[in-house]
Structure formats: C-alpha cells, structure tokens
Amino acid sequence: MQQFNEWNACIDFITATDENDVVCLVVIAEYFNDKLLPLLETIHQLRSIYLLCDDSHKHYVEWTKFSRKLMLIQYNSDRKSILPPISGSIRQKTHETIGFQTFRPQKDEVVDASLLNRLDASFMYSQLMKEIIIDTEVDYDEEYMDIFANACRAENQDNQTQLESINCFRNTYKEHPPVWWYTKESFLYSTLNKALRTQDITTILMMGFFIRDLHLQLIELQQTETENQSFSILYRGQGMTIDNFERLHQHIGGLLSFNNFLSTSSDYDVSLMYASSAADDSSSVSYYPHENEVLFSMHTVFRINDVSEIGERLWQIDLDFTDDQDEQLNVLLEHLRSEISIAGLLNVDRLGQLCYRMSDYDGALQIYHTLLQSFSDNFVLLSYAHQHLGLIYQQMDQLDQAIVHYKKVIDIQHSFNDDQDKERYLTVTYANLSTLYTKKGDLVQARMNCERALALVSSTKDNKEIDPVVYCYHLSNLAFIQRAEGKIEDSLDNYKKVVELRLQHLPSNHPDLSMS
Image 1: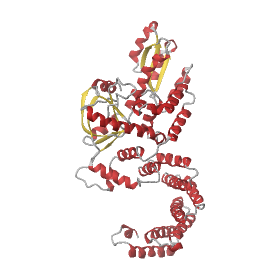
Image 2: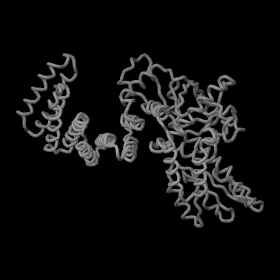
Image 3: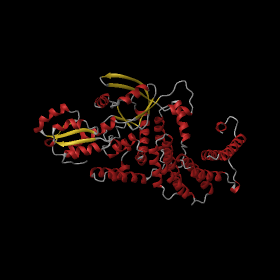
C-alpha cells in the first residue's frame, strides 16, 4: 500500500504500474476533487476509486452517476471496514483477466508432425507445462518454500502487512490444506494468478511446490465428490475482449483450457454478476466455506459446444469437461514430448526445452539462468546451461552474447576428465560457433571452429569408431565455408567426399542425399 499527499505524485505512480496490475485508489472524501474524475476514468490500471465518507457527505452520491469506477464507503475510522470491498475488487479483476488457449482438431486429416505448425501451439505448451510442474517425482523440499518466501519478502520489503502474511504462510503452510491458502485473501492468490496469466516462468518454478499440492488436493476432492455428489451444471462469469470472444466463437467444437486454476460456482446469479460487471467442490475446505465455489486445476481441458447471445453484450458459452482423450491432441502432445526430450536432466531443464521448442526464448532464458545460479558448483549442469543459453541467444540474433556462453562451455570442458562427455560438448560447441561466425561473416573463425569439430568427430583415439553420418555433417559445413571463402577446389573435393560417404552409408531415399 502506498500513501500520497499530492495528486500529481499519486497519478504518476498509478500510470507507471504494469498494465496487468490492479490498482485501487482510496481517498478521504474532503480531499477529493470531482474535476479529477474524467482523468481517472481513462487510466487503465485503476480498477476502482473508493471514497471514504460519512453521513455528512451524502452529496457525493451524485458523483457516482458520472463514474463507473467511483464507489462510496461509509467510513467509521476502522481501517478493517474498507478491506472487504477492496479485496473483492482485486479478486474480480483477476477473475476477468484469466487467459486461455484453444485447440481445434482438423477433421479428416492425417495427423503428422507438420500439423503442429498449423495449430495453436500455445495450447500444447500449456498442457506440457502442467505435466512438468506437477510431476510427482520432483522432490519439492523445504528449500523451495524458503526460496519463494524470500523472493516475496524482497518484493514487499516496505509493506508490513504483506510481510506478515508471507511469514504466516511460510511458518504455518502445512497446518492448512492448499485450497484454504488459495482461497484466502492474501499475497498467494494474486501472485500465483499473475504468474500463470503472464507465464512468468521464474515465479511459476518457485511456486511449483504449491501448484502441485493444490492440484493433488483437487484431484483428491474430485474423487470424494464423485462418490458423494456431482454438479451437473457449473457457472462462471467474466469479462472478455472482442478478440478473445471471436477466437472462442471460431473454435466451436474445439478444445479450451484456462491458464489459471479456474473458479466456478453452482450459483448462476454469482456468475452473472461477474459477467455483467466487466473440477472440484472446494467450498468445504476453502477460507470462505459459505461460498459454493468449485475449483478446477490449471489447464483443465473443456470442449466448446455452443456460443449464444442471452442479452445486450452478454453471451453464454457452453463448455463440456473432457477427459483429455482427444486422439489428435494426444498424438501431437506425444510428438512434442519427444521433441523436448521429456526425460531431460532435470524438471527445470524439461521446461526450458519446452520453452525453446515453442520459441518462448525469454522464458527459456529465465530457466537456464536460474539453472546457472542454482548449480554453480556442478560443472556438468553449468556446461549444459551455458550450451543452451548460447543456442537461445543465437536464435535471438544476440550473437555476441551467444559467443560468451559458448566460450564458457569450452573453458569448463577443459577441466573435465571424462573424455566422452568432453568430446561431445566440445564438438557441439565448436559446430555452433562455426555456424554463428558464418552468420557474422567472420569466415576465418567459422572455418577454424568447424575444423576443430571435424577433428574431434574423426578421432580414432581409444579405438573409437567414426560415425559417417556425423562426419559428413561437419565436412559438408566445412565445404560450405570454403566455397564462401572462394576456395572452390577445396570445397568441391569435400563435397565429393560427402556424396561418396553418404552413398555408402545411407539408404537411397534418404533426404540427406538430395542435399548433397
């Protein structure tokens, strides 16, 4: 909470906040000027203006007719009396800004790898991210909670109320079920939903322990509720941009998943209230047990059945909960799992590979930089992280940054005793540097690094057999560089060697032969 005694400073603070943040302005009535209302109405981040007044300020009621954000609160000098409407406003704003992904299977079409490029890839990204985060084989120990709590303390170091809430969470986390913590009005709800909405990978990783605990409890509740009772119809209301609405309209018959844990209600009027203003029955274990809330885990999949207009600017979207058994989706997910090597070194690495595969380079950078900080004394993981950071920066055309990380891989590998790992890392790194320098136009460095990679793959030390396919790959790269240098005869000789070797070792219909 920030306090201001001067309007210009207050407005500057609000407009400087992130557009995804929710700002509520609380003003003592006698210090408010109605001439400010037109300006305040235009500030996107400003959700609500609460005017604290008593019975002597009844004339302020007229102002509410000219502002959709202005609300009056009877103030009796008790600060706690203003918290319910403010916290409710923040929760409603979060409710409205939950993002989603859609997936529309292609009818009468053979499913193959190329289909991945024609569908909404973010849908599959979200499904695999959920699998990785909630993996039960990951050991989320006390250290994960400490890392998350310390990060939250650093973010809220000047907010005593939030610090008390964070300390309470860390010290008493295991005394309450995850759903209780999620539904409690605290830093946890807003932090998690913002991270999931904006795909803040760093925060999502830090909160992995809580995300998995909450997901597992919802699965447990689902099993219990299935035995005791079931809600045939559940409701949810929220505001939506025109673009998002059109996307839903175009995907009737397709699949839908929400980024966040999805709050629904068995009460139609509650959902209508949310809509007009802008898995599992958790009410028995939530912080507010009187609310008939049904909570679904993040990225739960629904099928879009119908979209119909039920009032002015009010539409009803009918969804069916699905068991994730869509055949085409499963084929594509399995393909993507293999692409990212789902059994990677670490859970965080699997997520990094997923980000890289989906061209989310900012997310991948966050993950591998986190890996560097977490394993500063593990040379294997350091080398691995630097290698991936080099690849990411290379894809982003930040070539000088990529060179820095590739050279760190080389420095680290020269301290290794395991020749097999050393040779593998150095070969890949020299090849990447060769490609990078070719792109920069530095053909001398490109050829030098290519020759280093070629020397490693052609080595027969320790009776190692030469892989002709790998050898041809590097020799072909050398021929390309020599041609760019104007060394036509050398280039032609090497291309001929590549063709001869490929004819000997590859089937006649192999695509590499046409490239030769």
